[in-house]
Image (cartoon, rainbow, N blue to C red; front, side):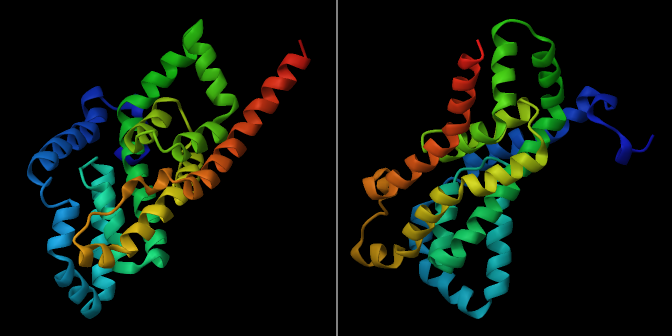
Length: 245
């Protein structure tokens, strides 16, 4: 059987783990060696050179930016927030937000597939065959996958890495994961991209960007509304379940 037709269960455990091992190694090395380069300070110090390069090579700048952002997310490198700000700084809120959300989705999908290939199938099978509380938790997630996937993307306090990894362990279909990731990160992506778009003025004042803006009432309010909409199907199912008792 060729590699193209092999499934995770038919591949040796070591080969299944290779993508995860690569991600861990690159994440550790990147966190150590690149932390000073993937930062707000690096963007501030190189802002003029970046703008000049963008003006002279727009498509090349966009390509380098997208690939870099995808690698940052796929390998869980530090600097995802700085990358989002850079997208706004270089390309404005729109189309910068589209570039940011697309690159983040592709990177998140890469790590999702790596985890699914290495561990997800085994853990999913164990959860499926388990009894008691763990089985009830998995069944609850299975019954409300769309809502749960949107919730973990919309709630600002859920770490992006956690939102990337958890669905891989729980057997979420790839298509559903990609759609919910893309749509779910749009609100936060637009907010931080808009902050990046205003960095020129921030730099001119010698200040740092206010990343806590997402918790401002006029920003957080609409996001809370989206969270409530995501919770609605779960609440309806719970109410119907009680009525059927």
